Image 1 (cartoon, rainbow, N blue to C red):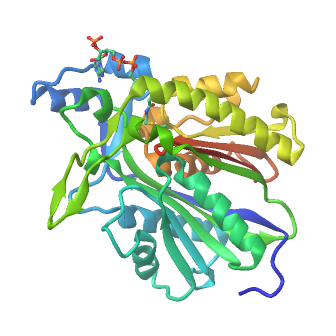
Image 2: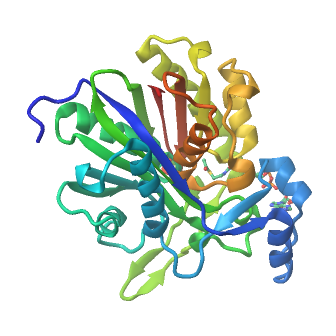
Length: 329
Ligand code: ACO
């Protein structure tokens, strides 16, 4: 344990990875049509803004995507794996029931020692993980963390359910978070309301050597939509107030990339112009816990997000869970 904890934590590097196989809406529609399921590029784009998604190859696991994203983040931060003493992997599609994907990532990065665990808050997972790592760094429980969101949602999609299978994709994003005298993360807030567990869930279990119940993602899309729009706005205002910042000080808004209509509404409600909204859902689909770090890495690497810019991350997802992190990059 670090005897003199850091005052703040700061992101010092970002990385991401998408599996090679990219399916645009036309290709997905053709695949579904083979099973008698009808959809179209026009329907998917109009309702969601999604034009394509990436799917992991047979045998490619959340840890495989996570390791590549983590290696990029380490390189960007100028850090070696052995300088990291905490790994948190936010995922709802872990490699196995246990050990955690984080422990598998640790081994694949050639590290040992330090803490490693998975965090399950579905699409809010990365925001939960970042806030947790920040607390651990500021309390002295860790000094330098890899915070990763990695998902292979294609494994839990029912390709006979056109209302859900067109929405999701696979991918990973990662950041290195380090103790610092300068902010850094300015404020975070996390919430959950388990009363809404049934509107977005994978209700199956493993029992007696077999899957029991339903192992596929099920969603009440309209209920999710309504809840998401309301909670994203309230948590964002609350986090801005905690940090003593006005909404128009936000240079970049990175909501969970679920649906362009939810994301645009979040920006509109905060009075932010569309140009400050980072959008990757069009090309990635909804990658759950990976979506925010993937979008962050894209905007850092293409030069939009620069040092000192204020960035608001907004998460919302199954549980029901939601949260936000405000940071100076
Ligand atoms: N292609 C063509 N038609 C479709 C498809 C499809 N892929 N999916 C559904 N439809 C049809 C339905 O069968 C229905 O037909 P009907 O009127 O003949 O019965 C019609 O389209 C309307 O269906 P709804 O489910 O009412 O469509 P809605 O306008 O609500 O849009 C959507 C569905 C896009 C899922 C919307 O509810 C939504 O955006 N919800 C937010 C949920 C979300 O983004 N979830 C992501 C995961 S949650 C998270 O990450 C926070």
